[in-house]
Length: 529
Figure 1 (cartoon, rainbow, N blue to C red):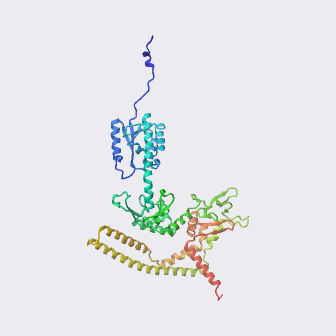
Figure 2: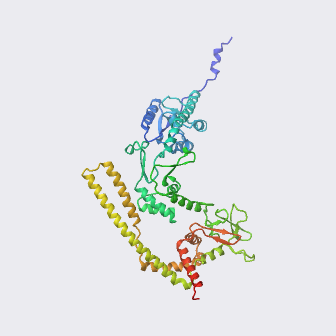
Figure 3: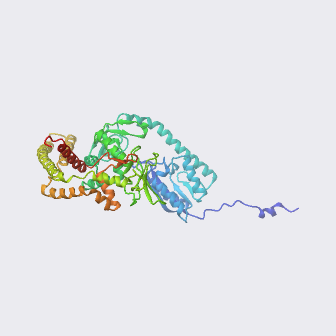
């Protein structure tokens, strides 16, 4: 009988080939700038280099090296960059080194899904440095998945302990996190040890005083892009998005909004930069301007798009073209029947187009020739009165500025002779500097030169008298500028009565039309007539 051993050479063995790839990458992370425990970036990087050397790996790329919360994976820029690099690179690494699975993620099931994609789809392993475990074995994969779920559990337990305390901290009127732009923050929960204090204190700084002026400009109708430019000239660089965020943040009027408070707004302990009335007025302006559809493309035949609004719901009208007729229309997408033709349909009675109606509206601001000299004289008087008032205010401001500068010198002298300590000195110095800044801001408008004003006034009156002509003959860009100059918040159309409603009119056009109207009324009611 033939011995079975003769057949062993035909048996099949499990192939356990050592990895041909020796290249590995590394990902490091800490949760905050201040983390200095065993998870510090330096510790993680040094451990990765030592581990790679011992195992014979070649460490070719590193990711992370910054503070990013592990709670939400796809808000971490470096983590996302790591995953993107794995997906697009041709020479994929054998594995990714992480000091501890909590450094990889704390999102539990989500992170397991990401890990599975790395292994199955891209053939990239995850290797934990502390334990030496790797996903290249079933036992290692199972254990590392368990640790990812455990990391999520740790986060949940921490929140269960910390959230009630955070809510109580908020209810007491304190702020969580870094104070918004324009404020200095000292307290028990500040990142900078130089700003540590047992009691939280949030005060307006120099940038805050500049932002206070920005709110006033917003009320005056200045666009965000121009406000940003003005602030830049004052030494404060800020973009449109950050300005937009500021307008909606009630912190600036002394209130606080936080997700932990379930939609409630809390009274803050900090000093408000503006009043609540100003905050609401600014947001009312933004709501009027942002309501309805955003217009990305200007159409020459429909220049009112973006400014013309529905009289029923307030939404901005959209436009469309009926190609068979070659006619353009404005339409409300929400309200049935709110549609108006752009130009007059001559064959249909009572169908004056939106453009002709708008030309009539612009013509209503013309000044009758017999009242031109009267309007011109009255505007000159208004400027003269304004100059006289400005001179009086300037004298008061200069007097106040002199008093404040005297107080500042006195305070410095007392500090120099040791009569007051440094904390008290700095406290009162900041207050005096703030008052000086505010006085200088108020006293920044120069006197209007009457001779130059007369020349400008003649050009302005000519523009008012020919407003509709400039609109008709101008390009679509010129038309838009005229529309927003005269009606900063747009205008409403009633297609049934064929009338425009204008909630806000530029003060110049309003004043000149009112002067003309009042003069007409006086003439009609004159007893000498």
